[in-house]
Length: 461
Image (tube, rainbow, N blue to C red; front, side, top):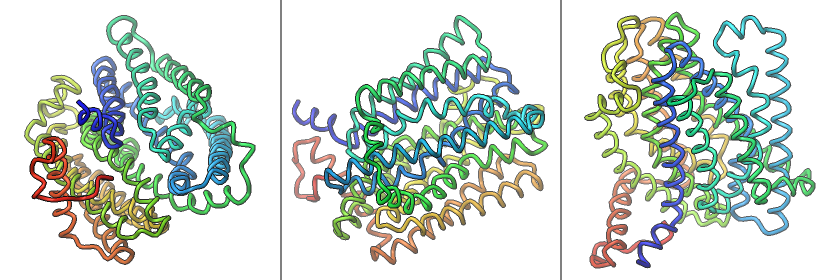
């Protein structure tokens, strides 16, 4: 019982649980909306979510990664100043974004309304202010490794909106505008809870100083681009498809395999969320060997896990598409000629490459090389955009769009390993041996260290 309690309270388990909760209800809500909305209307919802995700990468990219890095090894005085600066900069960025969106909607109202982004420009400025406190709380809690509280915030937000979608599906048919209003109310409630609990850090905003503002902004000028670029790597496909002759119907079709790819990435996001604070803390204290050891272990363990996940997704692609969107997407679409199941299988191969690519990125950030990570993401983004343009306008194929994702990720892995090797002197082979050692050690823990002759590694993984 004590062993089970220890595992349940472990950082990786709590982080994984948090991401499983938000992914499960997000996926279930997505499936219900895909079944209840027409293809065109569903495409508008996808654009609203994708555009919001892109803007939030800018808002929170300015300070989030830097706050986690510096807060991990900060003393009490610096901690209060850093949290205050994070709240102040986040509020300023939100004001700037809201003003830009409102002005654009006023000047280009007709064009925006006809583009499918009308919902986003109208409602996101309000949503941005109301979801700021609970998003600030998430990053502070991640730096402090309070994954149980993170789980609570995510559960409140995601479960509440899922219940709204459930009511929409079974009882009351809501319009898109009504769904967005419900989303806004839920985000306001989640933020209020975070403020009352004192997790968001807004009470420290008066402690912000020019030194900590400058520290976060200097780091953030690179991580902002990195996060925006990372988001665009996921959403550039949708954006380019939406602006192409393929239209909103193709956006809706392509969003289904994208959503399944998010399901694949649940363990990746979870383990990365715990790896970054650990690696950053070790780097701040100049423990380079520990940084290297953490990189090997997380990269290897996740790679082996993703082999199983990708194989499972490839084999059962039809089943996943059916669960997510129903029978109507199992066959080749008669209008566009695209087959969702085949795209899912291509993305399952793409999933194999994600762990090492993501770990090289956070490795560069943790050793204070955010500019190199930004360069890496920039090159990947350019490769992705070029690949998408060729796939859509020359081949007119969504399969080729998915294949472009594989190509740019291979480029990212090569660049990440090349630059990180300059800092840590890495061995590619050690990634895979460390991954094996991770699972042997986990097995030893579960079985009461019965097979301790295999390996002994540090418990802080």
